[in-house]
Length: 205
Image (cartoon, rainbow, N blue to C red; front, side, top):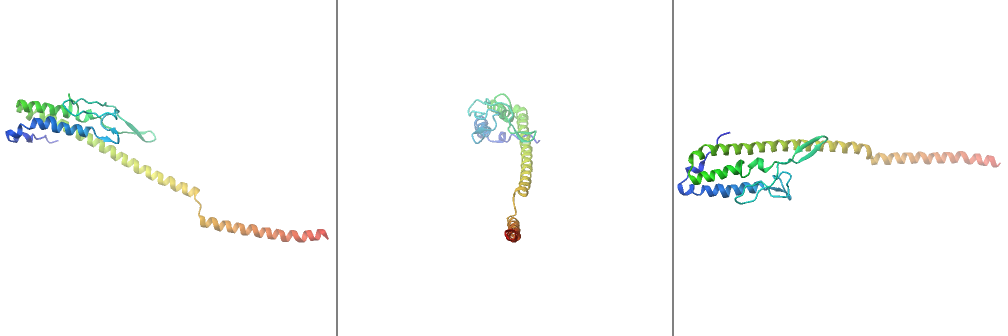
């Protein structure tokens, strides 16, 4: 993974003065907004705390969710993880990307260029790797779900075919068979009547 470049330090001095505000406000606000993403009415990065926003905008980076994993069955004895905890993705006030950005703000304000060019960059690289790894995990889950969904569709189509073969009737063939059987039945009745009628007359005689 190539190191993250601290492009901002090559700006003019007036632009550099804006960097603490960008890191501490603009960037953290955007990160928290993404970490508070919802699917319907549920927060997807809060662990099992799906009804509570994982983060609050502002100076506090405390994580309000938990790290519990939600599972769903996709087949007999087969389960898949559905969520990723925001604390494991972007951290909180003590670790992760959010804490790194807060440290960078402090180093920018104090002019600690040595930290900005070394430990801060390393921390940004680590946070970037964490997010990249999480994206890969989610991608693998998505592929697995797509495969399972395709397999379920195949099974559903096969079951529908078997059911159709078992229960559905060929209407044209059914009507022909019915007409044939009725004709045979009526012919049998006529034959029986023809046989019985003379016998009764003979008996009466």
